Image (cartoon, rainbow, N blue to C red; front, side, top):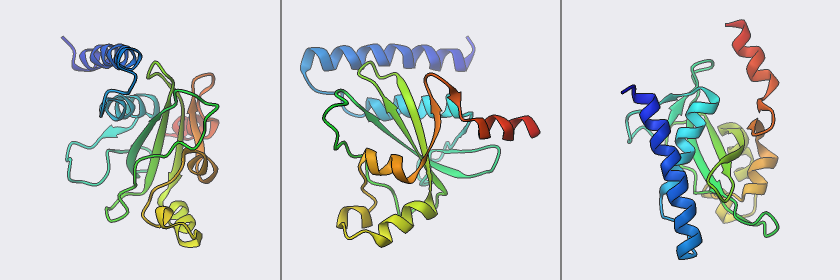
Length: 166
């Protein structure tokens, strides 16, 4: 059996299990959203997986060779707001962060990207000790970064243009 197909099938089953677990137990299944998000970011943004867990980043962009941390957030109720992303590894060597937003079925609906310099600039200007440690809200990350992919339109136009020139 071809490896990518097996991974896609496994992730599809993980989505179903995670959604059903939350509906049944009333809380998310720990750790699964990040695994699903990493798979989705790599597949949808056409990234290369980083095999070394100690690297400080999860993938690299084959077009510009940026080292990317992948973060996720599953949004169960969009009316609540205030959701936070996991703390960024500011002491590691990486170039950008990708945030995969997923719906209650653990399906991606938007992916945002922010470069390290933009995140560091925000942290330096912020009076928030959380921001200085690399902890941000989803809303703040969306303001700082840019939309790379969404469910309706796919990849942003600039990404398509970059790939057409290679």
